[in-house]
Image (cartoon, rainbow, N blue to C red; front, side, top):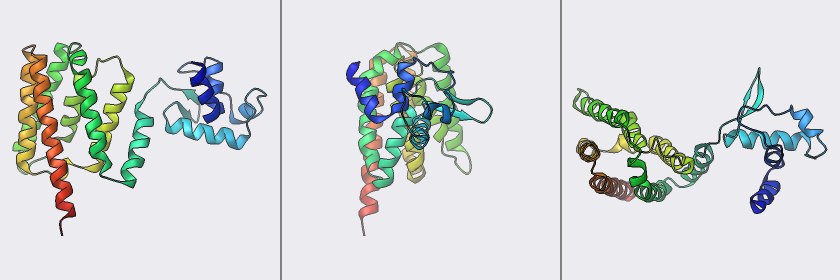
Amino acid sequence: MHTARSVLTASSDLLQYIIERNLQPGDTLPSIQELASDAHLAASTGKVREDLAVLRAMGVVEVRSKTGTRLKEFAFTPAVRLALFFALARDPDSFEAFSALRTHVEVAFWDEACATLTAASLHTMRRCLEAARQKLSAHPIRIPAREHREFHLTVFEHLSNPFVTGLLEAYWDAYDAVEIHRYADYSYHQTVWDYHERILEALSAGDIAGAKQAFIAHTRLLHHHLHRSSEEEGSP
């Protein structure tokens, strides 16, 4: 704990201020001028503004015109998303590395997450599957991007680990941003949802191990698609 606090002191005086005063989600921070004049904070107005901008980007605080600056519930997603999108802006191929991380995290937490699934969770996944099939059979076809995201995140919706869920949410934000689904052919989308159906049927039958194997096979399909897309872009 002392090491963590020393890191906070070095990186953000305002974060240290929040920790030392045990401020909780919903608590309002003093104004920028009040913070700058606080003898314990010992920061200039410019430094306070800079720290607030960073905390907003990290999702630690929210600023509203009528209520001022308030602390938000902790969420890992904003910080991961910010770093991930910076990496993607520098090198779009970095998505594949993050995708591999996502796969390992999901496999590692699969059994624990699936043990928390409810009948309502399975119903949501069934609804996603049916909506996706309808979109893919429409004329013209529509890509079930929203259903894809919701199907996967539902598996982990009751997992009490904000770091896992934050990483997965950031992954799907990046997945949408790089528009992988847009450049895939029709057969790829059909095969993806065939795997989703296998995952759902296994989970509905209580076969968590079978669902995990279907998920792993499904991620290999994505890995193959990413490699093929990269090779096509690099070909003359």
